[in-house]
Amino acid sequence: MKPESNYKLFASWESGLLLDEMLWANVKANQNLLKLCPTERTVQFIWKDGIHYVFFGQEYLYNLSKWCSEKENDIEFFRKYLLKFKDTAELVKKKIDNFTRVTASQLSDEELAGAISKTRLLINDITPFDQLGMIAEPICTEKLLKIIDKSKIGQVTMPPWQSTTMKEELAVISTSLEIINNETKTTQVTPGQIRTKYREELKKLTSEYGFIPVFLFNQNWDEDHYALEISEKIKEGKEKLEQRKSQLNNFEQNTREKTATELNGINSNLPEIIQIFSFTRNEAELVLSYGQCKLQPFYKEICKRLHITVKQLRMYAESELYSAVVQRKANEAMLNERLANGAGMHTNATTGELMEAKEIKTALANIEKTEMKLPMLCACAGKAKGKVRIVRNAEDVKAFQQGEVLVSLWTCVDFLPAMKKAAAFITEGGGITCHAAVIARELGTPCIIGYKDATKTFKNGDEVEVDTEKLKAEKK
Image 1 (cartoon, helix red, strand yellow):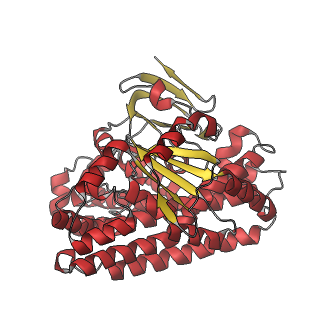
Image 2 (cartoon, rainbow, N blue to C red):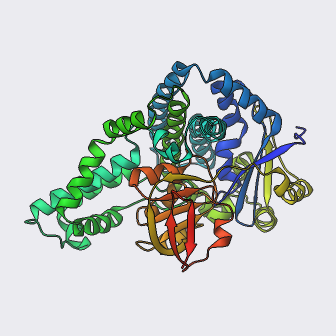
Image 3 (cartoon, rainbow, N blue to C red):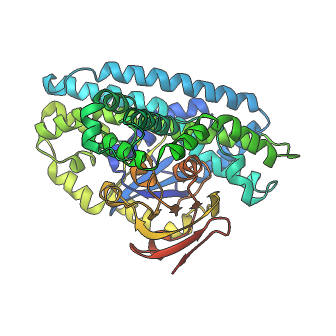
């Protein structure tokens, strides 16, 4: 495969390693994306020094922009796209359940490799719904900003459908209220008491929503997590919880009414298109979390058989991993070299090739020249004060304290435990459909996206005041 010479840096973030990113950008994912949007994607992705970089071919971005313009007046296409996503998501989760029902330790090497390959191919069926929204949304947002005030962008693009994360919050609040009523309206119930008396409720929450924060290789929410969260929720008091429950139950109607008010007199399909992109993007990532959660025992079994760490495992390309499992032989020297010096791939809908060290060096040396500029936006209006916590990985999520200001390159569902505690979000990555923007609006947390060099401007412990409508975050 001859890589395209002109690439644009679309985004960069922490966490994803080579094996992780292939779920979005391998040949199968590109083929599935081509079915949704008939313009072939060329993508170059690189991991180095803890940062993942995604580049798209300029010709692809140009063709995608043309496609968006052509489809802008065909709102029925996007409504059908939404229905197709919902059907695909339901089917993929059912098939994943079937493929991962077996016990990993009882499988032969060939069966273990096959189960992982089949499940990852299923995840490839859903990731294009995340990708199309991510890549096309900035094109649509740029057009929308020409006809609507920047301050309204967050509200008019808010998806008017209850998300999985909102359903999870509603389930936690409902369980908390049930316990308050059973415990004679007390606000002091310990996690231990909840584990002892409400184990079935905890099991139900874990079974239905425990997969949410896995995404890459984070830990799922277990019964201890929910016992602690419910104990903290109960301290908020019955009145506050009932108010939030009412907000969640009336979310869809209220969102539609607020959006209609803001759009009064504006005739454009772009807000609804971006709403659909936003919803499908973030729900697709949760289906990916579901698949990754189901695959965890299989990945752990591979590490055990090959005598490697999870981090080493994640530096394999998919075809290499299959061979390593079947032959029961790991190439630790290669994996360690990639961890030390980086790795990357060129892919399209036909082929995928690992990048050479020289190509990686050249691509990263030209970032300033190739980086796409996304606008700084207020994703959710509000003001907040707090200490900064830079969040890059699972350890930072665990260390996050209530009321801190979350600062990161981007966020993903792995960050949700910290996001629920945050006073505000500030992310370098932009796009009104990005994870931080969506969760901010669901939780009502003030949020600025597209804040250039935020992770360099602020450091842990900085006292800041955030005013998202003015797009300011000032150290105090």
